[in-house]
Image (tube, rainbow, N blue to C red):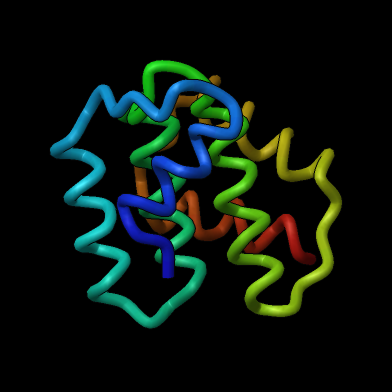
Length: 110
């Protein structure tokens, strides 16, 4: 399970770790703590980072690392190109529904 500190550290690898939407960060992490579903956890964090523009810069790359973290932690193989396509799709279609984001993440591992 990723914490606020973990997410900021991930973004620091690509940018300055400057949080632009602290409320969204706190909400997403609180939702992560409330569920045991790793896909739902990844979906909440994906939505917060991409749709709420959590960080000043590096949101797409940070999201990719978060998704890869969850896939690795749960023993799934994946193709990074498919993860990149997933991120672009969420952005272009402005997908904010957690269930839809979960399904898109599931499709990456199928």
